[in-house]
Image (tube, rainbow, N blue to C red; front, top):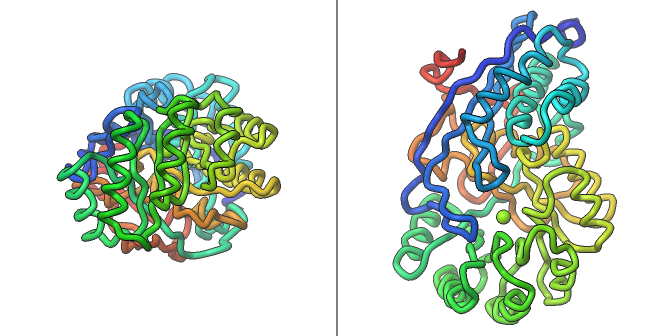
Length: 370
Ligand SMILES: [Mg+2]
C-alpha cells in the first residue's frame, strides 16, 4: 500500500510575499502586520504523492521568518526527512525536533506538507486523517485595528466581506483602548460579538482597570490581557466576568499544561504554527478539552494553505469554543496563492470532500518550488 511504503524523496520551498488588504492591516501591541514574507513547502514522495505546507512565520511572534525557514528547511530539516517513511508522520516531527531547536512555525510548515501528503495518500480530507470531522463549518471572526476613521474603514471593509464577529486590538494605552472599544461597539451594534486582544500589552493594574470598562462595553472575551509569562495575572482576570483567552502564553503542549495547572485561562488560542503542525494542534485542542478549557483556532495571518490547515484542525476537534476562530486567509490579502479559494462567506469557512488539505497553489506558484 502506498500509504505505508511511501518515502520522502524531496522537501522543496518557494518564497512568497503578499501585501495585506490596506484597510484590514492589523495594528496591535506587537506592531503592524502589513505584509507577509512567508514560505511555501512541498513534500514529494517516491509514490508520486505530494503535500503542500506553509510557514506563516513573523519575527515578532517566534523569531522566525520566510528566510530563516528556508535556511533551516534546506540545511537542517530536509536531511532529517529525505529517505524516511511518510508514516507515522509523528516520527518525522520528532526527527525535526532532534535536529533543530525551537522554530515551531518552520516545523509546522513542513508538518502541514507531511500531513497533507499522508491524507492525500489515504484519499481522505486531512480533518478525517486527524480523527474528525466533528463539523464541516467553522465560525470565524476578524481583527479590527485603528482609531476613528481608520477603525470605521476596517469595519466597513470587513462587513462588505461578510464578517459578522470581530475583535479589537488593544494594549496600546488604556485610555485609548477604552475609547477604541467604545467606538467599535458603536460601529458594530449591541448584538454583534466583539472581543478584545491586548497581545500582552497591559500591566496587571492596567488590565484590571480596562476590564471594568470592557465589561461595560459588552465585550465577549479578553485575549492575552497581560504578559505571556504572567499566568497568575492572567488567571486573576478570570473574575472580571469575561472569558480569558490565552494566546501568546501557549505555544506548545508544555505551555498548555502550565496554563491548565495554573487555572490561568478559560480558552486557549491554538495555532497550527505555534504548536508545530496540524497533528500537534489537534492534540492540544483535545488536551485542553479534557480539562474544560475551550479551544479556538488563532491566526498569524495565514495564506490559503495555512488557512486550510487551520480549517482541518478546527474540524478535527471534538469541541470548539463558542468564540469564533481566526481563519481569515484570503480575506486578509490583496491576492491569494490558491488556485481555488477556501469556501468562506466571512461568517464561516466550510470543509470540502477533497483529500488532504483540499487546496492547490496557483500554477505559477507551483512552478517556483525548488
Ligand atoms: Mg491574539
